[in-house]
Image (cartoon, rainbow, N blue to C red; front, side, top):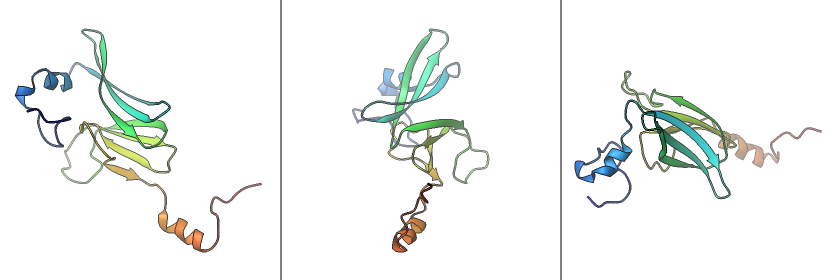
Length: 140
């Protein structure tokens, strides 16, 4: 088909896509390298593939992050309860924001993380604002 972007979540690539589907296929012999970078406009998580046979390295897909990335940690267990034997490709991204974002690397164009660990406690910050406390507990 001539649709835009990659497949929807859970949808398989169609055979008539030809070379596009082959380019998106990660071979068992490929090495996947996750990198995070920031330029003037945005912060990006890149899923890179390296083919040791040909020596080629390319960006398989990327994910735009909402804040400056500080750390990455790969894990293969889905962050939501379900099938106990389920496996996938996920990354935890620590940024300058308080929460840790969990991204599903099997989704090509995700709009938001699969889950966020921690983060800002909105109830506590609203209560502090009502009480007149500026929060942050300045020292010195």
